[in-house]
Length: 84
Image 1 (cartoon, rainbow, N blue to C red):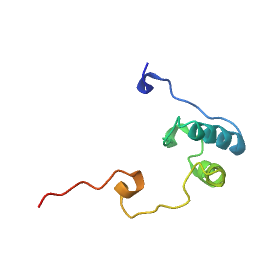
Image 2 (cartoon, rainbow, N blue to C red):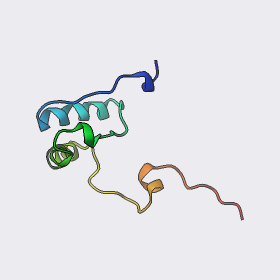
Image 3 (cartoon, one colour):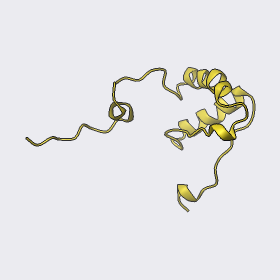
Image 4 (cartoon, rainbow, N blue to C red):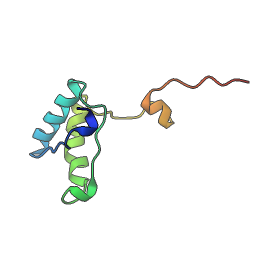
């Protein structure tokens, strides 16, 4: 069964509990990112951004800044070789 066959995961709890679960996923290399669905999140994403993201950043599970200026630099693939 592939990842696309898995049911969606729900993280419910206090900001500390949610951050702990997400941090565990990152630590196990079980996640390289997360998709937040605003229309399924009561009250929108403000509480998540304001209360969970800082905890993830403190734990090293979410970046505090971007290193580059392009999507490619954020995601990490090598620059393509351009033929003249």
